[in-house]
Structures are given as C-alpha cells and as structure tokens.
Length: 314
Image (cartoon, rainbow, N blue to C red):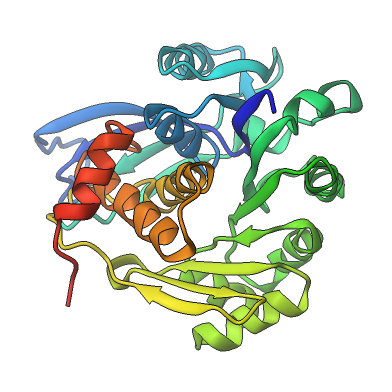
C-alpha cells in the first residue's frame, strides 16, 4: 500500500483559548491564560496524531482559498502529511471553529461547516485515496457531497482492495442515521462517541446500541465513553471495556479523533484487540493533556510509555 493511513472528511481550522469562564457583558473583555491554533476535525486531528506516531499519512478533504486554508495546509505539511488529495476552490470557505475551553476541559464552540460539505472524491482521485492499509472516514454526516452515496462507494472499494476501514461520525439525532447506515456494511470498525450512538439509536445500553449497528452490517463497534473509557463489541462475540487513564484534563477537543488515530497506529503494529483499544485510549488521554487537538500527542514511543506507566481510573 502507498500509505499507512488515509484520513478522509472533516478537517477544520480551530482557534482555542483556556480557561474560559463566561462571555463578558456588552463589549467587555475577560482575560485568559492561553491561546493556540490547531488543525482539528474527525479527519484532521486523526491524520496529524497518526503522523506524529510514525504513520505515512494522506489527508483528504477540502479547504477554501482563505487564510485559514493556507494555515491548515501548511500545518498538515509540517507534520509530514501528504496533502496532494486536499481540494481547494475560490468559492469555498475553510471549515473553522472558535473553541472556548473551560477549566474542566469542556469546550463550547462556534463552528462554520465550510468546505467539509463540498469536497468530493471523484474517480480520478479514488485509487490514490484508498491505497492505504487503514482507510478512515471521519465526519460522516457532515460531508454533504460525499454522504450522498460516495462514502459508501469509497468504503466498498477500500475493503475490496484489502484496507481496514474505520468510520467516525457527526451525529445528533436519528435523522443522521441514513448516511451512516449506508457505509456500515463496508466498515470494519465503527467508532462513535457513546453520546452519538445514543442519539442515532435512541437507546441507552451499549450492548443494545452495538447490536443495532451490527445488524446494519458493521464488523465491530467501539464506543468512546469519555471518562469511562471505551467499549468494544465485535461480530465474533468478543466484548470488553477498557478504562480511561487517570489524568489532569486540560482540553477534550479532538479526544475521540485522537482515539481513532491511536487505533490505526496499533492496528498497523499488529496489536491484539484489547491492546489496540488501550493504545487508542492512551492517545486520547494524551490529547486531553494539552490545549487543542493533538497537542499532547508526541510520538509512538511516548504513547507506549504513557500507556504502560499511567494508572487508569477506578
């Protein structure tokens, strides 16, 4: 395969501050301690975190011909990510967010969807985009052009070519389910947050929710549970939970997306299922120790050391 990891979908420019307390009244000003910029989104966070940990990565998405787009492409390139499949048009605007991070790590945000809804992988691009050991669709439900059947075709072709396929979503209600159900028959690992799984299914139990998705054709469900860790259920009957690591949280922005990167890295390394999820959980935890997506992720060796030496939550 040409790439270890092809990350396709939601790539955004983020401006973050910490710690946010409240919106000042009128034209007032509150003082914060830190500002930073980050490439984020379900595909953007994942591809940089994976590149930091040594994978040969391709980013696939869209940006506008604006200052944010300039910065996103420069930042991806700085981490060695191949940006040759990134699309750019004058009429597009780069997907962007203002993220106000509270002291507890929660992060209310303002977001403009932008070019994520517009980019499209045509037949001329397809062979490059799926030429990877792990092909990730990040942000199904936000990719308006791709969600109209093209994500399904891409996942189908990727599996036929021998790739491991992973899917993360942007979901807030059962109305988002059709675009997601479309790709699940060609998905090896479906990795939403527990909140997204609940919103899609209307159910509260992880076993019940995973059965819904398994019945739709996915091979394995992995739900990220925030401070409770992660839940894994495979079609072959393998089911387990991995606890979260005990850390001081600074910012939760991109934690689920960093989990996806860690999962891809561990898959390429040939880890067993429990160690794969544990490594993904470690990547997510490290992400939460810094301000902005990927900030706490440094390298594969650093993540392994963290995984082997950090206590988990009881």
